[in-house]
Amino acid sequence: MSGTSTGHAADHSLDSYGDAAASATRVTPGNALRPEDIVLQDTAPASEAAAQYALRLGDDALVYAQRMAHWVSRAPELEEDVALGNITLDQLGHARSFLTYAGKAWGKTEDDLAYFREEEEFTSVHLVEQPNGDFAETTVRGLFLAIYQHLLYTRLLDSADETLAAISAKALKEVDYHLEHFEMWTLRLGLGTDESARRMRVALDKLWPYVDELFTDEPLYDELEGVAVRPSTLRADWDARLGELLERAGLAVPQVPYAMCHGRRGEHSEHLGYILAEMQVLARKHPGATW
Image (cartoon, rainbow, N blue to C red):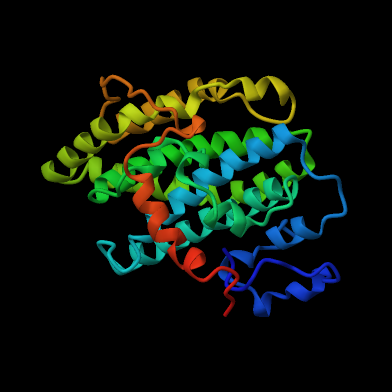
């Protein structure tokens, strides 16, 4: 997913990835762990279970980034255009790190996992696959996901897997901003005009069915005690933070049934195929191409 081939030669050193030549997602503050660093780590690759877990986190971030990228040049105001673009790049950076770590366990690169898997091999949740809709829908989806990722990455700081903890530490700093951003817009739209509040209520009802999948446990977590976070353990805090914000915004938690979603099993919404077709076409048409 970088601007150049990711088939890095074995004799590369960390210094060969200077920021001056880096893509936007490679630039990280301080000594934060980058995908290029993960490639060069002289440590044992992730266990099969940890790699599968990293794949899930990476797929969520990748598909969400691809969706959000469609907002670039289409946001309601210029500053928001930049903000949504930055959020997209942050999520793409998270995806690169998680997929790189997962791929090391299987002898694959981040590009192999992003561009050369079939739809049923992706493990993203249905929430990130949904169309952007109007700006209220993007705000609600962003809020749902930012609260979830903030809670998740905070807990993963204590993971026994040092690489997952390091990736989460970098991601948390960025998600902290995403959460603040979408909370601000929720208050602004909820307390704005009758029309903005109406659209927020519609967006909440429309996206609420996809929330429960975020907190569904799987047998995989039985093998990752101390490494992964059981999604169900995040639900109470997520509900509390969302409920408090919606009350301040003059909105209410939807009373809408949940949908049957099995994205973790490779059973996706009808939208993912279109996303992948657009995302993968260049790499599949010109395999190995570099700038």
